[in-house]
Each structure stands twice: as structure tokens, then as C-alpha cells.
Image (cartoon, helix red, strand yellow):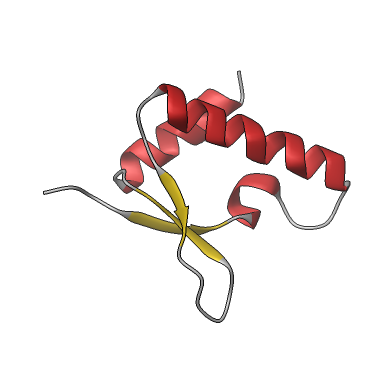
Length: 68
């Protein structure tokens, strides 16, 4: 059974700040996910949300990898 984790883009990019910095963080996140074989998709709804085919624990590891 595949696991799914829903999140908002601001979890990755932060709230406020420079658009170029946010775009850079988002692209780095998507790149790390792609390299590790995860798929990120937009789920929509009232708020623009996203989903990744990873557990919460795997999601946290991806966030840690982005710091390096």
C-alpha cells in the first residue's frame, strides 16, 4: 500500500519573503523528490495543496536533505 502525505507549498518555501528564493526552494524540493523517486502533485481544494507519495517520516527526511 502506497503512503500519501498532503502538505501546503508554504511548508517548503516559507511564508512571505522573496519570490526568487521561494521558487529556488520549491525547485530544489521537487528535484530531491524526483531523484529519490517520489512524485509530487497538486491536489487543489479551497487552498492550493500538494501531495507526495511518501510517508510523513520520508517527507521529513526530504526536508532535512534540502538543508544540505
